[in-house]
Image (cartoon, rainbow, N blue to C red; front, side, top):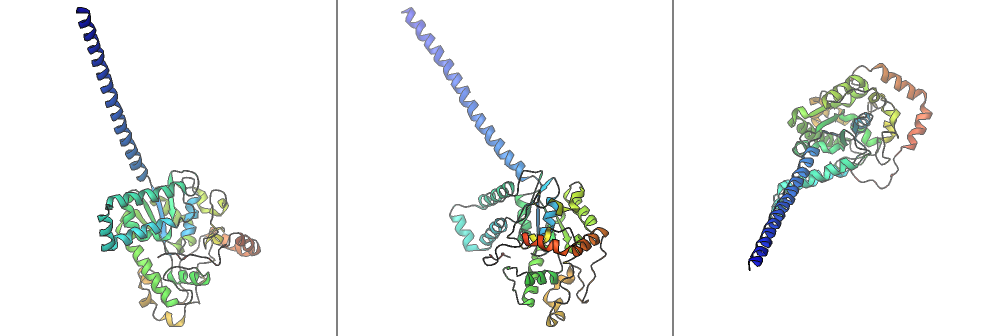
Length: 355
């Protein structure tokens, strides 16, 4: 009997030890799971807080040139237009603006926080996996993202924005001559295009103003006339060190810089920074537009452009740019042949860009 009692006590003692050990292990697993979950969330938070550059502006305003210049910096990776980033932002904006649609989402269990988390994850995943190897600073060049700059800053708090601004008359001439299809623009109606440009750039300037110090306006004319000074200011704004390669992006085409043959500007940015396109629009403004230009596009004057002169002066060109321009003109056949290699390959099936 005494032996049985001893056996029972021993069994109870072993059972107690097992319970304690299992309890400890289970708590350890839970702590591990909780810690793992916290680490994942922390990692996501850190990723979304990393510096991201968004380049935007109205099409034909130098956004491709700007991204090629930044792509020539070893710390930055932009890549070609994603096209999907501005579309998901437009969808989210449309849902929010429609009371009926927004209420349907809420009724379906889709909260605003849930939707924003999904949009953030979508955009971030696209940027991380698009455009080449990982780098310190991600960059995106989708022109119409600047129409959603305020919202984007809520998703990516450390993001910075470059708004490319160009004389609207030059933009319209380029759109019409190169037959660029953009929603709201016409290939034949100059007045309609002026109004569309005015409305588009007005929205972007207001968005840029609202986010204050995180947005920097870059005038295309100054970028090509005085590239060193302008790029120095841009890099200072982005808190990125200067490297000479940013003045010679053309030397890195098909190396660090990849170009899409579906983008209209690819055959132009293969050249060094030059003055060819600066005043190409001069002499092509219809007579019935000249007298009403301030009414049709008040943003021109607001942005500081001379709307009275038939041939405005944008400033003095840097010797480097003059040298580049002369080189291109003297070797026209070489550059024309090279441009053909990067000419757009989809002349018939082109989807319109959404404004």
